[in-house]
Length: 211
Image (cartoon, rainbow, N blue to C red):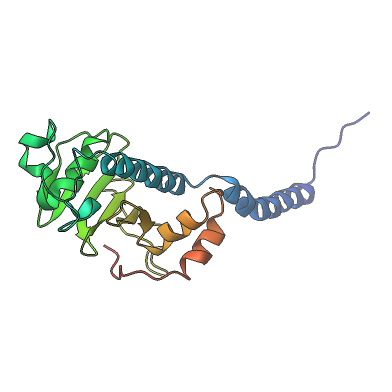
Protein backbone atom coordinates (compact mmCIF):
# COMPACT_ATOMS: atom_id res chain seq x y z
CA UNK A 1 0.00 0.00 0.00
CA UNK A 2 1.35 3.38 -0.95
CA UNK A 3 2.15 5.60 2.03
CA UNK A 4 0.89 9.15 1.88
CA UNK A 5 3.06 11.98 3.23
CA UNK A 6 1.85 15.08 5.01
CA UNK A 7 0.57 17.89 2.88
CA UNK A 8 1.83 21.43 3.35
CA UNK A 9 -1.55 22.40 4.73
CA UNK A 10 -1.41 19.66 7.36
CA UNK A 11 2.10 20.71 8.39
CA UNK A 12 1.06 24.35 8.71
CA UNK A 13 -2.04 23.42 10.71
CA UNK A 14 0.09 21.28 13.05
CA UNK A 15 2.61 24.07 13.54
CA UNK A 16 -0.23 26.49 14.24
CA UNK A 17 -1.75 24.18 16.86
CA UNK A 18 1.63 23.70 18.53
CA UNK A 19 2.10 27.48 18.58
CA UNK A 20 -1.25 27.99 20.25
CA UNK A 21 -0.58 25.27 22.83
CA UNK A 22 2.83 26.77 23.59
CA UNK A 23 1.36 30.26 24.00
CA UNK A 24 -1.29 28.95 26.36
CA UNK A 25 1.02 26.74 28.40
CA UNK A 26 4.02 29.08 28.69
CA UNK A 27 2.51 31.30 31.42
CA UNK A 28 1.26 28.22 33.28
CA UNK A 29 4.69 26.60 33.19
CA UNK A 30 6.32 29.88 34.18
CA UNK A 31 4.10 30.12 37.24
CA UNK A 32 5.05 26.59 38.26
CA UNK A 33 8.76 27.45 38.40
CA UNK A 34 9.83 28.59 41.88
CA UNK A 35 11.10 32.17 42.09
CA UNK A 36 14.73 31.73 43.17
CA UNK A 37 14.99 35.32 44.41
CA UNK A 38 11.90 34.89 46.57
CA UNK A 39 13.34 31.68 48.01
CA UNK A 40 16.58 33.49 48.78
CA UNK A 41 14.78 36.45 50.37
CA UNK A 42 12.78 34.14 52.64
CA UNK A 43 15.86 32.11 53.52
CA UNK A 44 17.98 35.14 54.38
CA UNK A 45 15.17 36.74 56.36
CA UNK A 46 15.18 33.69 58.62
CA UNK A 47 18.99 33.63 58.74
CA UNK A 48 19.11 37.26 59.87
CA UNK A 49 16.31 36.72 62.40
CA UNK A 50 18.05 33.68 63.89
CA UNK A 51 21.38 35.51 64.12
CA UNK A 52 19.69 38.48 65.79
CA UNK A 53 18.11 36.16 68.35
CA UNK A 54 21.44 34.51 69.14
CA UNK A 55 23.22 37.86 69.46
CA UNK A 56 20.60 39.44 71.69
CA UNK A 57 20.40 36.36 73.92
CA UNK A 58 24.13 36.58 74.64
CA UNK A 59 24.64 39.09 77.50
CA UNK A 60 28.38 39.19 76.79
CA UNK A 61 27.63 40.71 73.37
CA UNK A 62 24.52 42.83 73.93
CA UNK A 63 24.09 44.03 77.48
CA UNK A 64 22.07 46.91 78.84
CA UNK A 65 22.08 48.99 82.00
CA UNK A 66 18.33 49.48 81.39
CA UNK A 67 18.71 53.25 81.28
CA UNK A 68 20.71 54.34 78.25
CA UNK A 69 20.06 51.65 75.63
CA UNK A 70 17.97 48.65 74.67
CA UNK A 71 18.91 45.57 72.62
CA UNK A 72 20.57 46.51 69.29
CA UNK A 73 20.77 50.10 70.48
CA UNK A 74 23.42 49.00 72.99
CA UNK A 75 26.56 49.65 71.01
CA UNK A 76 29.10 49.06 73.76
CA UNK A 77 31.99 46.78 72.80
CA UNK A 78 31.37 43.12 73.79
CA UNK A 79 33.35 41.57 76.64
CA UNK A 80 34.33 38.41 74.80
CA UNK A 81 36.92 37.57 72.15
CA UNK A 82 37.31 38.17 69.29
CA UNK A 83 34.98 41.16 69.53
CA UNK A 84 36.58 42.81 72.58
CA UNK A 85 39.76 43.87 70.78
CA UNK A 86 38.38 45.12 67.46
CA UNK A 87 37.02 48.66 67.34
CA UNK A 88 34.63 47.70 64.53
CA UNK A 89 32.53 45.85 67.12
CA UNK A 90 31.36 48.96 68.89
CA UNK A 91 29.38 52.03 67.94
CA UNK A 92 27.55 52.24 64.61
CA UNK A 93 29.46 49.33 63.07
CA UNK A 94 28.87 46.89 65.93
CA UNK A 95 25.76 45.22 64.52
CA UNK A 96 26.90 45.09 60.86
CA UNK A 97 30.21 43.47 61.81
CA UNK A 98 28.56 41.06 64.24
CA UNK A 99 26.09 40.02 61.54
CA UNK A 100 28.92 39.53 59.05
CA UNK A 101 30.85 37.44 61.59
CA UNK A 102 27.96 34.94 61.70
CA UNK A 103 27.72 34.58 57.91
CA UNK A 104 29.99 32.85 55.40
CA UNK A 105 31.67 35.81 53.74
CA UNK A 106 34.32 35.99 51.04
CA UNK A 107 35.86 39.32 51.98
CA UNK A 108 36.50 41.54 54.97
CA UNK A 109 33.62 43.95 55.70
CA UNK A 110 34.33 47.58 54.86
CA UNK A 111 32.56 50.70 56.07
CA UNK A 112 32.27 53.97 54.19
CA UNK A 113 29.89 56.89 54.76
CA UNK A 114 27.95 54.89 57.33
CA UNK A 115 27.42 51.83 55.09
CA UNK A 116 29.04 48.49 55.84
CA UNK A 117 29.51 46.20 52.84
CA UNK A 118 30.51 42.57 52.36
CA UNK A 119 29.77 39.60 50.09
CA UNK A 120 28.66 36.11 51.13
CA UNK A 121 29.75 32.88 49.47
CA UNK A 122 26.40 32.54 47.69
CA UNK A 123 27.25 35.62 45.60
CA UNK A 124 25.00 38.08 47.45
CA UNK A 125 26.24 41.61 48.16
CA UNK A 126 25.17 43.02 51.54
CA UNK A 127 24.92 46.67 52.54
CA UNK A 128 23.96 47.61 56.11
CA UNK A 129 23.17 51.11 57.32
CA UNK A 130 21.60 52.68 60.40
CA UNK A 131 17.85 53.06 59.96
CA UNK A 132 14.95 54.37 62.00
CA UNK A 133 17.08 55.80 64.77
CA UNK A 134 17.65 52.53 66.63
CA UNK A 135 17.53 49.89 63.89
CA UNK A 136 19.24 48.96 60.64
CA UNK A 137 18.53 48.59 56.94
CA UNK A 138 19.94 45.52 55.20
CA UNK A 139 20.14 45.59 51.40
CA UNK A 140 20.74 42.36 49.49
CA UNK A 141 21.86 42.40 45.86
CA UNK A 142 21.27 38.89 44.59
CA UNK A 143 23.64 39.05 41.61
CA UNK A 144 26.22 41.58 42.80
CA UNK A 145 27.14 44.11 40.10
CA UNK A 146 25.10 42.50 37.32
CA UNK A 147 22.11 44.47 36.03
CA UNK A 148 19.55 45.68 36.76
CA UNK A 149 20.74 46.73 40.26
CA UNK A 150 17.34 48.01 41.38
CA UNK A 151 14.57 47.22 43.86
CA UNK A 152 10.95 46.72 42.83
CA UNK A 153 9.13 49.75 41.48
CA UNK A 154 6.04 49.44 39.31
CA UNK A 155 6.73 50.53 35.71
CA UNK A 156 10.37 51.16 36.58
CA UNK A 157 11.95 47.98 37.96
CA UNK A 158 9.57 45.03 37.75
CA UNK A 159 12.30 42.36 37.76
CA UNK A 160 14.52 43.50 40.63
CA UNK A 161 17.69 42.00 42.00
CA UNK A 162 17.84 44.12 45.16
CA UNK A 163 15.77 43.56 48.28
CA UNK A 164 15.64 45.56 51.50
CA UNK A 165 15.04 44.44 55.10
CA UNK A 166 14.42 46.65 58.11
CA UNK A 167 15.84 45.31 61.39
CA UNK A 168 14.27 46.96 64.44
CA UNK A 169 15.94 47.50 67.80
CA UNK A 170 14.66 44.17 69.12
CA UNK A 171 15.99 42.24 66.12
CA UNK A 172 12.70 41.72 64.27
CA UNK A 173 13.05 41.62 60.47
CA UNK A 174 10.54 43.15 58.04
CA UNK A 175 10.53 44.27 54.41
CA UNK A 176 11.36 47.81 53.36
CA UNK A 177 10.68 47.60 49.63
CA UNK A 178 7.25 46.58 48.40
CA UNK A 179 8.18 43.22 46.86
CA UNK A 180 10.09 42.07 49.94
CA UNK A 181 7.02 42.92 52.01
CA UNK A 182 4.88 40.84 49.64
CA UNK A 183 7.29 37.91 49.79
CA UNK A 184 7.31 37.89 53.59
CA UNK A 185 3.51 38.06 53.66
CA UNK A 186 3.21 35.04 51.33
CA UNK A 187 6.03 32.70 52.38
CA UNK A 188 4.47 29.35 51.51
CA UNK A 189 4.15 29.85 47.75
CA UNK A 190 7.41 30.23 45.86
CA UNK A 191 5.71 30.31 42.45
CA UNK A 192 2.99 32.89 43.10
CA UNK A 193 4.58 35.66 41.05
CA UNK A 194 1.41 37.36 39.84
CA UNK A 195 -0.13 37.58 43.30
CA UNK A 196 3.15 38.71 44.84
CA UNK A 197 3.41 41.57 42.35
CA UNK A 198 -0.26 42.43 42.84
CA UNK A 199 0.24 42.51 46.61
CA UNK A 200 3.48 44.49 46.31
CA UNK A 201 1.61 47.37 44.68
CA UNK A 202 -0.60 47.70 47.78
CA UNK A 203 2.29 48.22 50.19
CA UNK A 204 4.02 51.49 50.98
CA UNK A 205 7.72 52.12 51.26
CA UNK A 206 10.10 54.96 52.04
CA UNK A 207 12.35 53.81 49.17
CA UNK A 208 11.59 56.10 46.27
CA UNK A 209 14.52 55.90 43.87
CA UNK A 210 15.54 52.61 42.28
CA UNK A 211 19.32 52.62 41.91
